[in-house]
Amino acid sequence: MLHLEPLVQRLGVSMVLGVPTIVGDALATWQDSTWTSVERVVIGGGSPPTSLLQGLSRRGVFPQLSWGMTELSPVGTLTWQADVPGEREAMRGLWAEVRRRRMVGGGEEMGEHEWTSYASLAGRAVPSLSLTTSPTNELLAQGPTVITSYVGQPPSPDHFAPSGHLRTGDAACDSLGETGMLRITDRFKDVIKRGGEWISSLSLERSASSSRYIETAAAVGVPSRRMGEAVVLLLVKAKGAPEADAEADVRRLVEQSHPRWQQPSVV
Image (cartoon, rainbow, N blue to C red):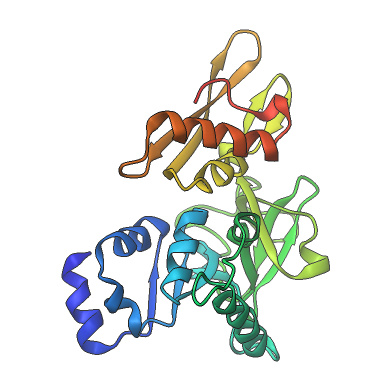
């Protein structure tokens, strides 16, 4: 990321786009002065850790979240779309509040739970894209930019719903139609089945990543003779963070946000 920094400085780049890992690398290596011209960062390809959003906000940068797939060509949703009536004003209002509450001049920083809630958003559907959910809460997509088949393959029920919507493989909350704001809750392939109950790996990862001691987290299911699968939470601690403090803080956050049967057996 260091080789991009001179370009950002010289060209006065106002918008940066990337997956959480790339944006995180930039946040860790670029000088604070490099971010002066950057007004917003569009993050896609995964749910960003709370620490990443907090780091951007401290530099006065607005984190705009998105969701999409190659099959959608590729953007499906964005938080705060400037071309939606009233949305630009709403974005400015929200970000003005974020700036007001920063730790500058005695302002209060956005709370951990507020950033965790924002990190789970993927935004509203872009124009012309139709999004809905199946009875199992799988997100379905249809529109002029969405594929209708894969090359060399006829449409299959594995990939398309009877309505013709593309099956995205993402699990979304069932309030999509009420709010218009999408929340991705998990990937169907990534959910963990423990004792007959489904556990969201993404939800556990979000809770763990909200710790200031953690750089990134991954929740996985491992075979268990008794429970079918056991939950293991893998962590990469932030540079210089004490290991004992990191584990204790993650366990505290997970215990606060998840019932006991969803909590990891091993951290």
